[in-house]
Image (spheres, rainbow, N blue to C red):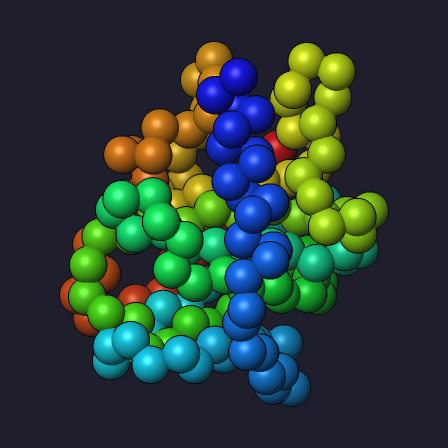
Length: 149
């Protein structure tokens, strides 16, 4: 049930209003004035180049503060977020390979598509613990992540 709730939360970020612009290097920048910190993310070792990566950044109270989408090129995806305030954050993402805008699950609720989180927290008998995903963001930072499956 807890896994199902986490997946529903991940899907909810799709409906938030976000402004995107694309650079030649497939980086996206989201500019909604909040602070003066930039976070650059790179997600590697993806299993295919088909479909987008859906990403959301949550504050320490599990509230989504930033959401984004990035395309996969050469089994990797890059996205940058700017104007972030200092604080504790967690990152969650999934690779929507069939482009249906949701994380697909098997009959017992295990994700069929690649997903991951900050600090490369692995699930153990359920979704990753949110507290383990949290990291301090006090200056510009680059994060490199790999999917769980």
